[in-house]
Amino acid sequence: MSDSLPMTIPAPLTPAQRTQIINLVRRTARAEILPRFRTLGTGDIDQKSGPMDVVTAADREAEKMIVRGLLAMFPNAHIVGEETVTDEKVAALAEAEMGFTIDPVDGTWNFAHGLATFGVILSMTRFGVPVFGLIYDPITDEVLIADETGPAQVIAPRRPARTVSVSKGGPVENLSGFASVYNVPDAKRADLIGLMTRFQRLYMLRCAAHEFRMVALGHVDFVLCSNLTPWDHAAGALIVQRAGGHVACLDGSEYRAQMRDGYLLCASDAATWGRVRDAMSFLLDEPAQD
Image 1: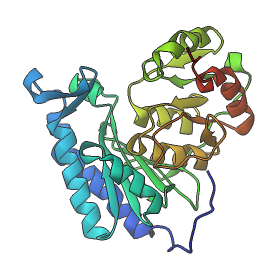
Image 2 (image 1 turned 45 degrees about the horizontal axis):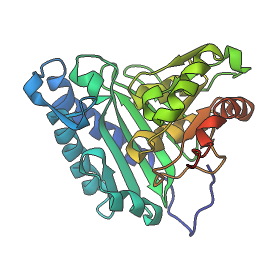
Image 3 (image 1 turned 120 degrees about the vertical axis):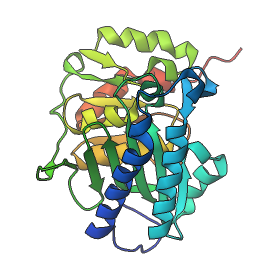
């Protein structure tokens, strides 16, 4: 991602503002998310696009609470939340001097079915460039955070903030990472499944929050994101970059939050990114014309 922006911009968030946002997310989890965890019945889970794409009251009410809090702090901010998104709101991130993206419960399918692999994702953008990212695990009360000025850090209760860093990378056969078979076009799925024999491991957690967390903390080497959505990917892209990783779209272009097409690849370093990109270049091939 580039630091170039179309105009002079204000200073990054102050430490006090960062703390306010962290506290807002934590309060929201305590009030709207955790009380509903493992208490939902089947009638409390609604489908969106299909049975694997679900939403609950935790998603809706948490987003409302976070939006209210952000607007109290930043009345002129442009806010894109997953549960109230429109194509127009996403596109407008490109022109917004201060944008926020919110995934109030990332990994909703996991959450709705009693799995603890879920989180809250929030980013701040300037003209589509992620400049602040937060990934919160309500179960451990741990925050993974980064901005454009310093390294990525983990903030956990009763412990000092800790700087995190990505893995050392390596050759393809030694790499592990995340890539969802089900988020690529049907015609490409068999090729992606075939890569499981080339890499050391390919995983799917159904939760971008924890996938990005694993890359930033150096536990795996890369994550490939498709079906680009700013509430899922903007914060994690910045956090992995500030943890020392290499972040770009699979075609080599710079990532921007308003992007909806293509693939985002985040890896431990430029060399590793290149190896993963080469292995997955078939995703960029145009389908044959009849």
